[in-house]
Length: 218
Image 1 (cartoon, one colour):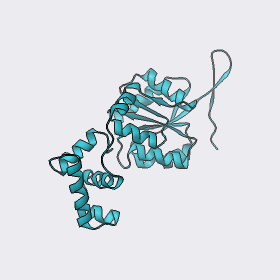
Image 2: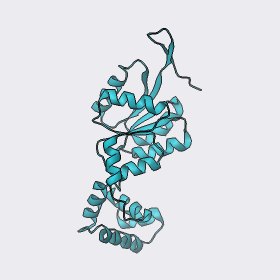
Image 3: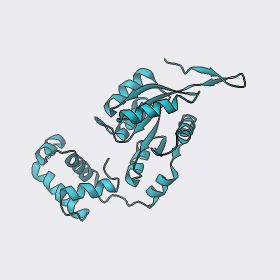
Image 4: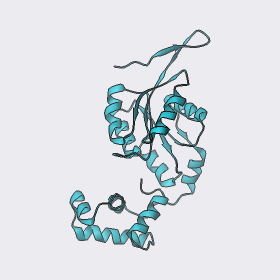
């Protein structure tokens, strides 16, 4: 088992170093975050990743105290990765970073049992504070995001309709979606037609745009 390191405090005591796994797909942003976090005496980035599908394996190996995860990651979205961590490594807390305050995404984040959810444009001081508070057992939600979620509309789509639309948004054709979900192609097309009607969209592409803007797709 990996134990947290200790550092000398100014008062002569010892403080625990918080071990951080950082997942961000943009190299420049990730490098800047690592540099900013490691300027703090009690913070250490022990793993940095660019893909969501690498998070669980890395976390199981290095056993971080907290995973700081961008929501939009290739391979596996950040919220799905956070849900995996909650299930298989519950002692690792999760703090999500997002550039968009979509109310539906925040609701999904809370459903995934994330411990914190803040905007990327928050200051380095606010990020460091959020990490410490989350590791201390607090839940940290950016106030602007909380207000957006409170005022946001609930999705009119069922779970299955959302799943079909999400796969369509990823570029899958009706036949591919049908094979993946064990449905007939006609059933998938009916779902997509229903989605377009429910969202009062012009077509499938417009439905995807509306759902993304509302935060119902990640």
